[in-house]
Image (cartoon, rainbow, N blue to C red):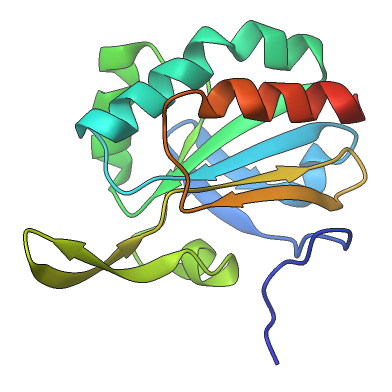
Length: 156
């Protein structure tokens, strides 16, 4: 039996530290939430993904939607990454992988011929009532932020 969030059901509550302060999912009720998990700050794909969400941030905000990034990086690394790329949204530090495990995003991946455990790039769309309405797992970065924005427009 899996305790992973299920599309169409209430998303399990969580509280986590971000580089902009603590985030409590319950306090975000009334807003849609885009929760995106990415492997590592300052890597090419993760940088493009963060910039794509940044460049559409005002559109997400106009649709009553918050964006939150999550990786295993430290708060210090998140702060540097956010400052460097002028990210207007919080980045959660999850070095103990609590949130990663809660959402089932830790996977064995092949890197340069070796099996390594890491975050599978994933995004979860939670509506203003806290219901998980859509998830994207193992996604590709190009065009992804636009797909998420379109999904938000459908529920807004």
